[in-house]
Length: 404
Image 1 (tube, rainbow, N blue to C red):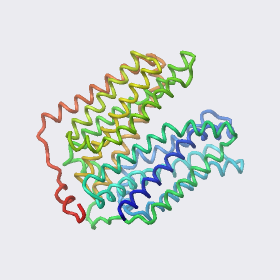
Image 2: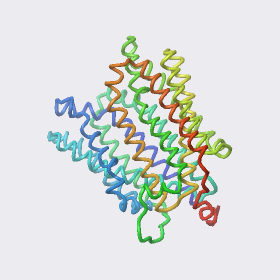
Image 3: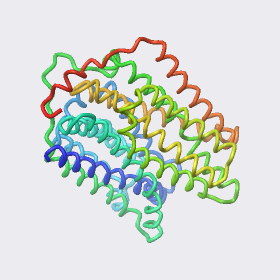
Image 4: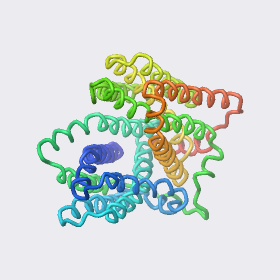
């Protein structure tokens, strides 16, 4: 019961904090715009928060190994809550300036760079104590809950803002992060044995080519993600139905993600991880091609649902490789690297997304992005199929633990 209870606390904390984040992200630009009168300032906090995450392979190598227990994760949550509270507090005092936004974003980014992989690693360790392959199941459910928040969070935020609540949503996010830290306090961590040299992300990948292959497939999917979100938004605006196409796509994607979460454990036990990940993002790419060719709300919803199922299966496949082949310090290093891959590729895609859509059109961008995603995913599968497979180096060690 201890492992199940710890898993419930960690999943609940992760779910409510991410849900509050989705709500607050709608309110944040409005608060900044109202207080500063500057459109350019609306992205300062979010942009600044991404810098520490992208640089974390260098500065966080030792710090990420420190976050190996619930109490330490709760301490990081306190730092995150403080950073989040800086913006509504400054707005209430009438001193919300660009330097405050940048400082708050940098501090929040430092916390995120440690908390996100730390919580995932702690959740995976809890799964190891629970039973075989429970680690990947818990990581999959964590991702599934996050995707549900992506779908229902923004509409709830819109209703709250319409009711006159904006600053309150930012305070809610800070408070929710504190609650998530409180929930983690009682979770026992599994301290890693002392080692002379902390593993880097690169060294942890050296014996795990399957992880690298999965990251390449996932990274290209994150890089071209803008064609789905920005592209559908532009299509709706151009056709005089603003928000309709994106709402259809996100709703379908959310439904598919939940279904993928439910069936993921059964699938990853039957299909090797690299082929599964490659097929997942190849299908996702073909779904984007279909959206570009048959751009109606119904077609977008159905194709997005198919894509949602496959992407969850692809992410679960990568999580399976990581959790089955690593533990302790190396697992935290790999989960940190995965966070960097997702954030860096997504940020790069969003950076070029607007100009690309403006030049090529949203439909053509969807088609081109889908073909690129599918081609890279298939290429990863072909390359790995010609390489000699390697055994998971820590599998025997992991399976020898009590309770597994």
